[in-house]
Image (cartoon, rainbow, N blue to C red):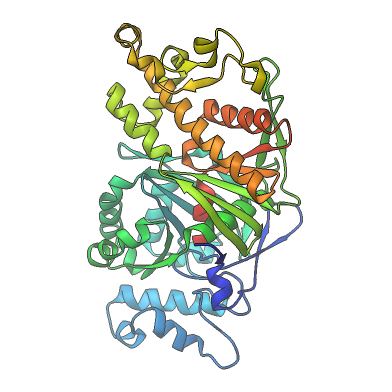
Length: 449
């Protein structure tokens, strides 16, 4: 993909998506599918993401998207209830609850859920039981089974979306658990509330048939790079519960005085956006709707976890990072000083720089003396240094000074964020600054919402 225009621009730009977190309202231009379907509070797309212009019929649009309203009118009470809720929601120009969005990645699924906190007594009385059940289940738990987690610390509170006030929850679980998630949707009779869910990521294609056959749900698929950019801009605009979403490290080259500092993306363009998931994609972003994929690498978060599982026997990303935090990569990597006895002064290479990742492992004596923690740390440093090197070269080639790193690889991973900050600062002689997000990965699911 050399040039990528927003999918929404190709189909016609929807209206602004307004968010208010107690400060000023900010427009979010783009198709933001709330719960079941397309745009939100838009003059050119209704609550289901369909045209509601002067030549269109709302009921005809409902018929088009929801697979035959006549059949539902004559169907079960649940189907008639669903149609009534949808018709009322279109009248109010917003979709019915529940409001979800999903980013189904190669390793992890990111789910966002909007919990309304301004439900009236009348609404509560009219709510169907399985809608209440879903809300109770998602908001009263912080863990779902053995692998699902709601990141309470990332919750965005008191947002106003489409005229409703509520909290935005961020939930994640391994992609390998997707069949169990789909089965849960079937067990909770989710199709009685919606027939279509919005999703992005490769898994939106991979699991589309499973959603259809197992849970009687269709997926409305949105481009993942569009969602990545719009999600980043969204979380930065609304801020993190009154605090800036974005941050950087001051004095990244000095481990003693390196400190985390908040910042905002007031004038974000152009920026180099480095998305570190299972693999890595690097985008040059010139505006919200104008960007290109510069390059990428297959050596990403999936590589780190896969190698750690092989080398150390760990089972999870959290376990791998815990091991890495206790290890010493210099026992595994060969440094410049191991070759030169000190710095390589002619080219400004410090003795502590890595000359050869895993270079010491040629020696049986070294192999016999290292720990699993050392191997995990060396793996983390190797993957991170490679990403940092590619990102810096791309920034130089594209003549972009702002580099933003996102992706689940950076979750609870201060080792890598500081390494990336150091690499950008050191090799650019202070010209490049690495920026990071508090919502390092979940924001990509928000535009599907």
